[in-house]
Length: 100
Image (tube, rainbow, N blue to C red):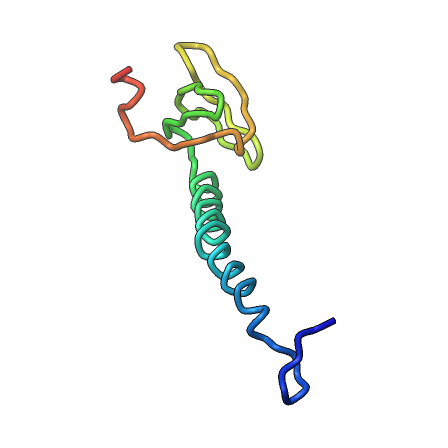
């Protein structure tokens, strides 16, 4: 059933390729994604009133109210929408809206 060496123990060399693949998978795929998620969560936590943001749906606006879970975003003069904080895709540089 298991490969055994002359000494009677398990042959770990058979498992080495699987271990190497797992380590490569971890460093090339999982770890960078976790780092990106942490940075996005930090960005979401730092959003305050007056910041310019873009939502995942492509809406760009200025934050007028910032709650724990929801943000009010002014997308045009006198037009405000409420979005979940997690729906914000990016925090934009000041003045981005004026240049549009």
